[in-house]
Image (cartoon, rainbow, N blue to C red; front, side):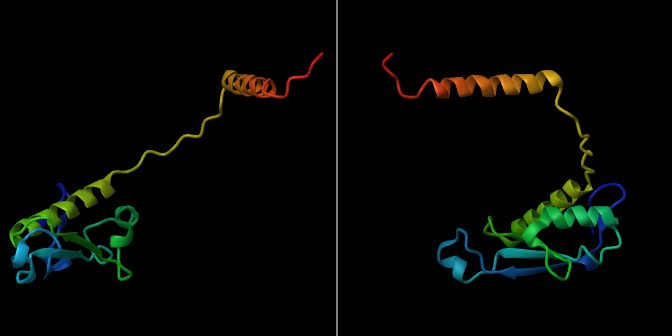
Length: 139
């Protein structure tokens, strides 16, 4: 069981891991040992995650979210399975904690009259500079 915070924890049945060959460091050993881990979290079926958190998790996971509603986390930076397993679990915890944060609602604001005037004055000055770049006539 992985504890996310005081109220949310991930049960063991929601996780499955698969070890595959890593593309990272290891020399000739990399061809013999499956040290990379792919951690699969059944997020859509998880009873511990509320609906809004699942929606934010889906958006944050991006292409790591499968059609079946699972999140697949890969870790292959270490040469040992144990370290890669811990790294994958930590990545999953960080992702879920980020999904738990409720984003602030954006409050629409209108530009002030002074800022509109400053913008238009800047455009006028810029236009004057460009107009002065024209051909010089002999008068």
